[in-house]
Length: 255
Image 1: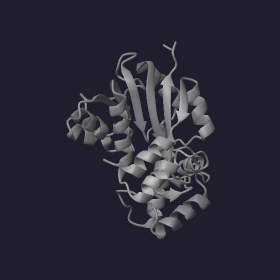
Image 2: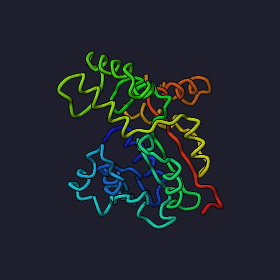
Image 3: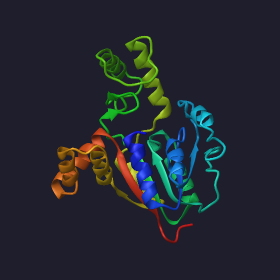
Image 4: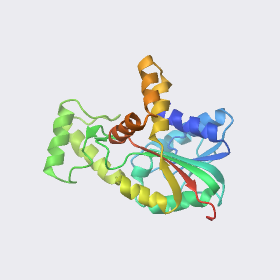
């Protein structure tokens, strides 16, 4: 389990209650949480750019601990969960408002949402590993030749490799165009603000990641994450290099 999933699991274990992992993929966090006594379920739309549905089925999770979202509706009644987590999901959502409204529906009054995902401001496109490939004009020659050149130099990540760098660039640019929807931080917080009260919580993740494999330097950096100036710089850099970490709460008086 990677460090971000470990952070999600740690957050869920500390929060307690009934938990839903939205966009759970193969159900790694769900299985790990259940093995530790957590009341956790998972849901996913299992979009065409992923193999996770088959993986969840092979693990015996699909149809039980993990359910499939159909027609945009989470298959649980209103007010079912105390906590909803989502990790690297919202950049794949076409209609963010619809998804947030549905999450709000299944969340109990005063419940919490943990969201981890990149904004358009991030420098490196994390799915294919090419910096700024998501920020250059779609379909442009500049983006294609830029991505092709960087792949030829050895940059880029993907489990399935194309026969050559040129085809890799074609395939991976088509993938991010089909399956990602990057939004600015302003757009993201505006959408969340329509349904929740939210705050950025990158500091908690930075500390967790640094202390996950502690060294004297990592311990020092974990302490500085709470300092006013140093912490602000760390958070700003983290958002550019990685993603946002947002903790949201369903407002009292909401349905």
